[in-house]
Amino acid sequence: MATVSQVTSTTLSGLNYIDSLLGNLPNWNYLTPGTNTIYYTFSTSANLESGNSAILSKPVAFSASQQVNTRTAMAYVAKLTGINFVETADATKAQVHFADANISGSNTTGQDSSHYGYSYTSGSVVTKFTASSYVYLDNAEWAGMNANLTPGTQGYETLLHEIGHMLGLKHSFEGSIKLPSTVDNTAHTLMSYTHSGGVHSTFSEYDVAALKWLYGGDGLAGSLGVNSTTGARYLAGTSLADTLTGTAANDKLEG
Image (cartoon, rainbow, N blue to C red):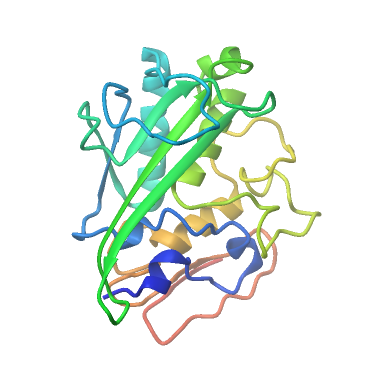
């Protein structure tokens, strides 16, 4: 079983382009009981987040077109991570919630707000771990941009950025491990605030490497990734001449 330190701090790879994107939460890998399904919803009828001072208006449901394009994004991340993302109309069942809202800060286009809870024994062994994530797109200053989430638009890139947070990625320029400024741009990671290479409709190479490290491409509780059943890792390289070093487990190394 996992320990408290494992579920509250993400396991690092030792590679800067991966570790600079790893946030502490949510650690979906430790959900109990063990499952490879995460439910998401567009419903705002129940189970709304409380206590988030950055949300200035009551969240409202995505429009029909926003929902269609969000389903496209979720199908994409499902294929990339191996996690089974299932839409539900029951907001009380969902762990991931999508909604429009007025977000504090005139430059803030979206926000992900994640929460977790766990129970543990006197020996710090976790017996239950739960997580939830609320993905908001601004419908005040950025209402026009976020109304159009068609792939190839800035709205869709914003959506992918927030989904990146939902999956456990942080900004590339924050925390104790950061990307070098020479590669801290969206050509390398959508978790950067420095735009490069036009509008992106997919995650960039560092994002993909970080997500493969976390989930192993086979979802939660698979044979690869953080908290895998075998202890094996999935290390993906970049367009540079990287050095990838495996462990004693049956790792997957991808140049």
